[in-house]
Image (cartoon, rainbow, N blue to C red; front, top):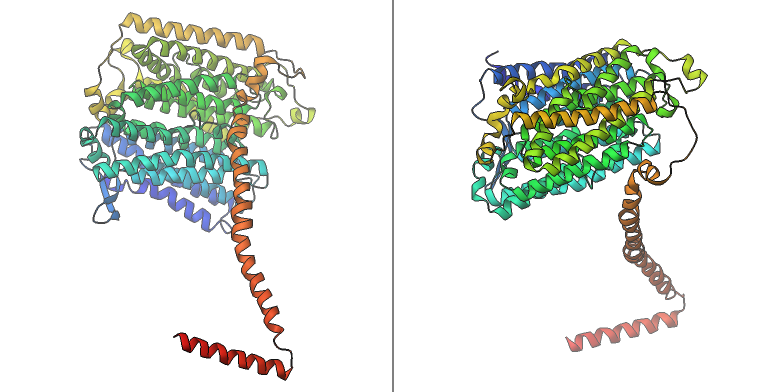
Length: 634
């Protein structure tokens, strides 16, 4: 195991091989083999990632990035294709490959009705998605990170629109692709800015020389990087693509929301922690945008009835909490919440997929109810995930959420107060979802009720594993107030954030204050949980439209309509105008004009061929005169 670092290149290469085999051989590979190849390659990556993590945990950390070849090598710039293995990348590797493997296994059952070639294509896309995310977190410079960054954007487009015969899914895929391109422009400009100032994009060189940059440079670079994070991690104003991304197969939703794409922005800022620590203005913006997104998305989730839409807005809200942590300098707290969120959010989406599978495609929770007695494993695992995301002790979400809220309180009690309000809404909408889905009487059709059944083992086993992780995953981050230094994740990640910690003024809370903060947030969330349970456990379907604020929330604050009015329609109108002026009248007019001129000229010249000798003699004389005149003046 001592030479395991020599095999780190296999971590991304194995899923890439799975993509190539399933993608190129999709017409020859059987469904069984496609599932084995797709899942097996990610499992191989997980095993190597686990061995790498064990080496790092024992104190064996590579002294330098692993250089494989020169990606860019010109006089003014040298960018290597390098991988950096350290505690931060190791944590993300385990999340991506571990949760990703469970999602692959789950998919073998969930997608069993697909045609063999489509089944293989689906697994090829999943493998490419995992490869791109691994490249993103393993890269030792911003350029390699950007390649993976674009890769996950491409894969989200391919997988959201996987069922492309439904045009609504294509629209959702295009929306995700375009909104991410907006953010990616900010990322790219930041990289260009860094290269122009420091002549490199390598993490080690950039972070070692960050003190040579001016405050204006650091603020500008971090703001532009944050624009990239807004797009990938769905923050205001670039968040509306993520709820629409539910169009794809449910395992894809789990992969996007839990293990890959949306965590990219968190990783990028955590990796660039020293830049953000030296840009307090940007940190303030990150905290405010994150908290605003958390609250906005939580209010929308209160009134959604599509089981996947509730979870989608929940993801946007939880990502907001992660950005709040980054904004107040709690980098470990942000990464901790990424990890616990990966467990319970993957479980929630896969549990929702199990329900949808049993309900023959039904996603409206108003047409569900009473599923507890038909789907015992799905029910209990979903309940555990709801308790985790609601922040109930001792589940994983409790530890990571309260670490973020405590850091926010130390920075500004107002941030804590608003954060607790979001936690209350989280508990309410999650247990509204749980109660309307699993409790009470069944509200679907007789045909649906006749076919209700627990999902196969390929679906339930990943649910059970994720449920266990959702329960015990928080134990790696037990706060000092409980076990006096038991926060093992913080100790593991300490070398990555050492530079930032040295520059940050620590605001230590007393144990009494910490207990008080935990007690208030848990009591408030518990009250919301109990209220939602009592209100919706005996829900009866009533056909009535929402009114007032309820209607506004059900329609997602009309943000999509606002964007459509102030951005989409004006851009389309401008495009139509330019199309008429420049293309139809300009380019088309010129091209068609040339054709008309040649046509007209040939018709006129044709008249000279009259067959009359006198005309020909006259033309000959005129030609001679013209010749003499030219010679005279020359």
